[in-house]
Length: 472
Image (cartoon, rainbow, N blue to C red; front, side, top):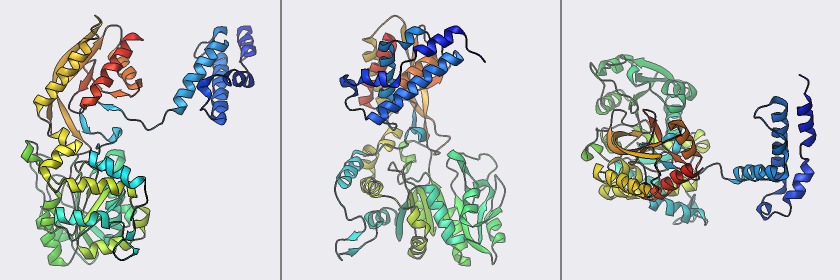
């Protein structure tokens, strides 16, 4: 489509790349900006202006070509480019184990241990007693066995990897028998049947969606059977007319037929959450005590540690898993090991673990403390007190998240934020654009902050974000 005279005139007014570079050179703002980055951003900025002139979207005029406005846009682009992509945010969603926001926060002891180990060399794979090459899992194997009663333990980079590795080791080319009601899918389209296919195991489904009996497993056992498998349905619940085989029953059956039994616990928990008024979640210790041969679970969900897939079980099985070539491809690094070891050590005193591990602390936080935090925020925000700002205290429920305890509702106190002239979506967007971003949720056309997942040191950030929103 031919350009009109106005468009042709604006294209002639486009600033040259060399001219912008020359103007930027004496400005202290650009001193720490690499020249290659600066040139690339300038080129992109000019290309954007050219496209806007040609397409008319967004509308531009001659004022947009002025030196001052171009320089202002350039600095905004540079600020964006220089800012790290991975940034801390304020989680005011009320979802404690929020996958999109990094799942579990690390305990201070874990953060300190990561820093301590990362800044120096370490004995990652060096046996200080023997003076020879060692095993990287030795940092966590002892404490895991102590806490759970397992004979051996190791860790890989996440629980999907742990499941894949164990299936590949124990059931490649053979049948893995699992209940139809336990063929779960979790976030990111991770499906147990798909992982089985990738591992080389042959899926053998038994029972029905809502009812599976021990006799169903027993009837499926044959010469091709390599593994009996149980999967904890941590991210959904089947209620009503249901029947499931317990881990102990399956372990006894496997032992009677000489077939290994594996259980994927998913989230994994070392603490009985029922002691804190929550729905009961099977613990890792219970699975080991039931006689399950190999147990897998996540490190960054209910355990409250770093991303990892933990594997516990019989020594003979763990020895075979370690020899699998996939183990090297899936192994964890020193920083993950440092965080995991420090987190596990906190569980030596379960009560202290609940206080020290942020995930457990948020899950078990008394409502009175959440109310107090919400009221403190309301007092701080009231100091701004412009007429167009309206804050309402709301009684709502929070979620565990991370695919754990899907039916659990946690009572909480929220603040509903309304601002005259700005929609709920507009508030959400601008709070998200704040530095650091504040992430909330929208309910009934109102922007909502849930104070179960808000930390005390987040309050100033939230108030600052609201202040910025009101003044721009």
